[in-house]
Length: 364
Image (cartoon, rainbow, N blue to C red; front, side, top):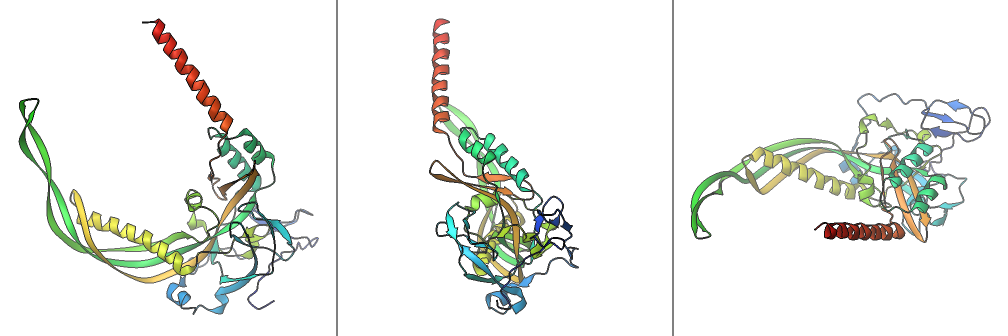
């Protein structure tokens, strides 16, 4: 094992069995003997969690202490790269339920700087999922029963990037002010006076500035982005400095979106916010923006992990994937439909329509 290849185990100091992180107690617990051990060094860091310099990272000039290698297995179906411990030999992919066999591949990556620990345990996540499924019209009863009684959900730490940046933008555009003129028009052979709105445009230019703090970018490609976006908001202010103890008993996905690609997505978000600021600064009733020149400086980033309970169920030949925010219980996933429920609803609707038509016809 190289100096940067990391494999973490946390043996119980009472019986030697592996400990796992328990979201309820926020401690490491032993399922064999019930022993509990506190996670040390979790007090907030002075000045918050350290940011790293973006330009140094893309130039491969980060300190070696910020890089590590971990054993991963890559799913042949969905491409997810998930970290496994040394005792794991075979498993299903937690993202799509495809059987995979672990390999000895190493993933060299930037270490996480912070994470949000799970605060929701697996039974609570399952309750949230079955409640969400039960609220969906036309969801198959069999799938709901399978989700309620099936195998346990997987606790996954999903990788994200966060970016901070100072921006200063100079813009050129036009401010539109509405005014009204009265005109005479012909309607049905009659003259009528109507008010017509017009816009008077004038040149506008100026400068806006904004500091962006923790612009969040998903660093995974294993799940549709609309699912993970639907899990927001995340309480990033409660983030803890990264401690491998939080991963005990859980899995962590390696990032698939590289740092520079992640910043490109963050920059798109920043540009949208800057354009909103520009329009507000122009004022008036309407705005036209012809040019925005932005200077961006002091770009920093963090690699962080956010907790997600994941269920991938194969039901009648299809895979259904559901994700639960490991902090809030918010659920997102693929919308399942029951053909017989839809058919029954259509038939029932036709019957109601026929009865209503019969009643109306006999009352005329």
